[in-house]
Image 1 (spheres, helix red, strand yellow):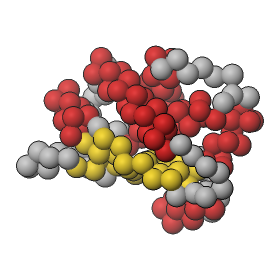
Image 2 (tube, helix red, strand yellow):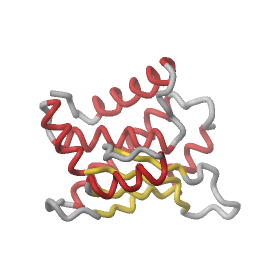
Image 3 (cartoon, rainbow, N blue to C red):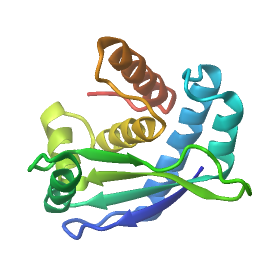
Length: 166
């Protein structure tokens, strides 16, 4: 899966190239995790197509910007850390690159949470990215069983990347 990275915030400088590389590495680990244990709603063939031909938009934004999006789409008038928007998990009839979804991360909120939890910003951004991508791919954490599955996958992916929590 290709990443279209957009730094839409202006509060702090970001090495977009390095961050894109980190996210691409995490995508590879997500692909491996799902290939080894695919969810019921995604067939192995579909997963291969998503990771071979799909495109994912990833944007870093401010708290103010994510609060507006959160209000518009979820009716919640406050900043959040990450929002995910699945667009299309089925490939088009003519297999070419297609946009699978969008992950929007508040860099400000990520920094606040990193400080709050006592770990690096890199770790927090990695967690939020993996969390967002799993949402794009249809995972959720509304029930205890969904939460156990999704959060277990997140932990395995981050562990495989060598990214530890405080």
